[in-house]
Length: 391
Image (cartoon, rainbow, N blue to C red; front, side, top):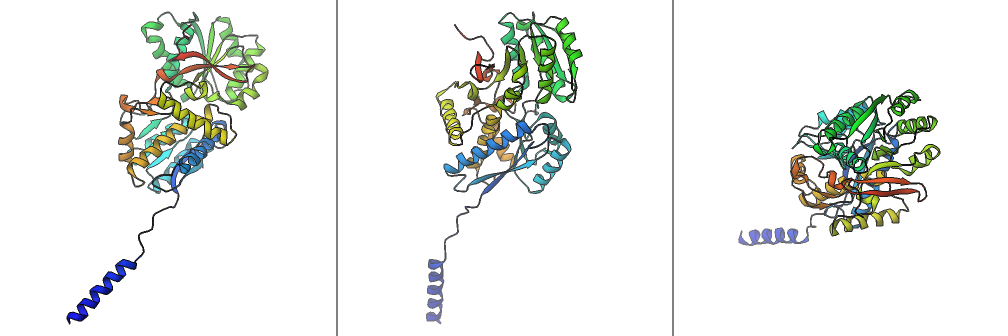
């Protein structure tokens, strides 16, 4: 009996010795994203998809997440809020912890009610303002800070009579609220909006609106439009012989758009830019982040514009969260991790989420940039925050 027991113990030990070690999981770790790859927002969504592919390559060259390569699964919502909701439902059914996107304000707003505490959403638009502590985040610098920077930029140049032309949708409503807030600040007490007009994104002409604005004799125009409507505004200004500095959304900062509008660009065309386009960094850590981004762009022979970098920082923040917490991290763990970030050096600035803004960036990260026709690119026209450059 003793011999039998000893033999059984030896057999068990042998089996343990020769049993294969647990295999390391090397399968791709998928991260879901919703982008407007087609439809009216395609010129933004295509750039976002390209950015995610570049992040994917960069992360995988540096070990992925705990040895697993990453892969961004990008769903096309066709710039349709209803389809955005359907895609979000599919992603929620997968029990995914994170979704990057959608692309623009209306599609982001459409999916936000479904986020709750079920998934972390990192919207691609600066035009949404998630509640403090929520599971939704908004990329790049928020529109309230963009408008404050623009007003400061014009005010310090003595351009205090401004005009506005915005779409009659959620984007326009957001612009109105942000301008009202900017003008309520004590330093802007001498700034006035002398003309305020609206348009539909489907309008083929805004000649009537431009005529009214021109008659008010503003010193600059804020045309807070995106894509095709911006071209409609610029064409109407040219036809009316109306040429004042024009400020517009950074969503228009694409080389394709500049080429398309080349025949009717204003003499001064201003945008709320970001460090990676201006080639400026506020810290040594940010210089490292910029170098990594530009090296990745160079490897692929790509020329950076606003859209090519828009999803870079959000994707890197998400990857960093998974690298810290592991691939089984829950939405709450990821949300809590991001909320505590206060020194993450990205290509758009140094992030600090402790203010509850759900975006980590502010007016201090804005650089007003101007399209330079001779150089065929954007150049810095202000210091950080929209202030006039120091002489």
